[in-house]
Image 1 (cartoon, rainbow, N blue to C red):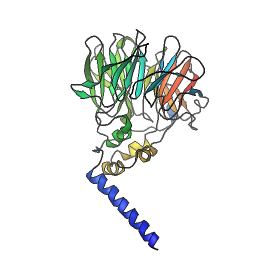
Image 2: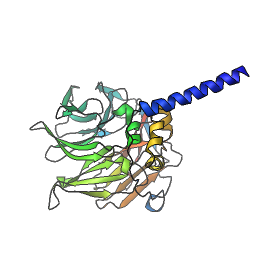
Image 3: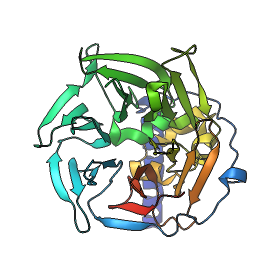
Image 4: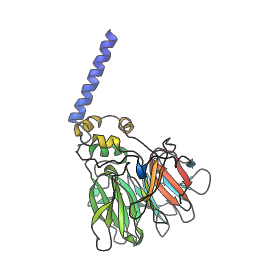
Length: 354
């Protein structure tokens, strides 16, 4: 009986402490938003098994989030421990460099340097000799909190995202639970070395892709399940519209193939976030729980799709068994589609669908 009373007392004290911390010292300032319509996995998004045959490109390390293809066919990815690794054929990858941060989005420029959006260090250039050069790590004196993805325009401008001005990579889940929408789309001019902000108030600004001929730039707004388009040329130059919205899952990185198709990685379904949109106090209470608890509330999926320039779905690849889960990047590389993920220790590989 004494043991039972002690246990009940400990439980009451724990609940009271949790409630007190959540009310008086919450890590978030929860906002309310209206979740967009969710079509679910039906119609052009219907569940299928077209990803069930994915293969694995040898063990690399935890969290190969994005993929970059070099001219010589080598494949690069960044890991959770700060390393950038390279595959040159079968077998284990080589470590190219350690950025001492968290390398996420990456792509090669015309000079053969690897450009990296590092969540902790900002916009980086990695030379073939392994030198790491910081191109930009702040705007108007305020350091970037979460450089996420990037792409290069034909004129050399580097377009990149700062996912959140409130939370860094290790606190990603808090940005979604807060819903304050502080993500940004920015550009870096390598000639003037100037950073400009083009779009603000994005609900977790994520993947970036510049259209052929630099007509526009696309940015994934993960929390709102849509992809925004900023026109760079023509009569719409300087205006913003929605390229595709009401997606059934949260969009991440965007990559374009040689046929002009845009490959969109979608790591998780939307239900948990949508259901919490109108309940700020509930999110505030949960925000003090350990990250492992908050992350367990997400609903990971194996899902990538390709759309054409009009936003029409051309390919829908899924795997209900989630053999390769939480896909954050789908990169066309020659005749292959390479998949990155925050939850795996290897890249996924499958033939590029025709």
